[in-house]
Image (cartoon, rainbow, N blue to C red; front, side, top):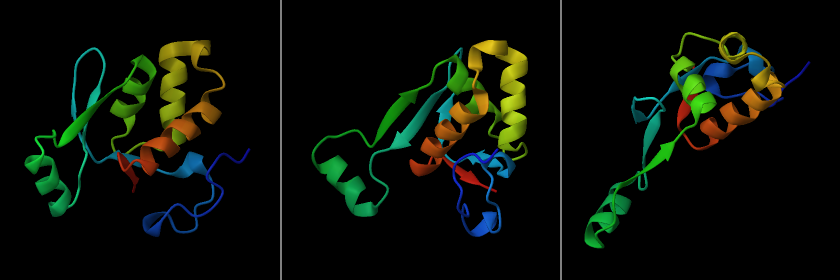
Length: 120
């Protein structure tokens, strides 16, 4: 079964065409607790940071994850493949996470698009 993305995933993912084989790694700071809160910068350029400072805008925003998202985030350690992460979720949550691989591929894809993870 082919899961998104069907194209190559990047310079370090050359030749990989199956999402289950990629290894995601977190790139943002986060706060641990019952549920994970990711701290995301609003502006990533120097000009953007100065703009935030000039207008009194916070430089970051927070993304609060639910139980499932927090579990995925904690497993994105740069050592496990998406398949292994899915297996861990099935073991922890059981049938509540089905269809796991389709949902996980969409979530991992969203984290990648937002720059919260990278593939190693």
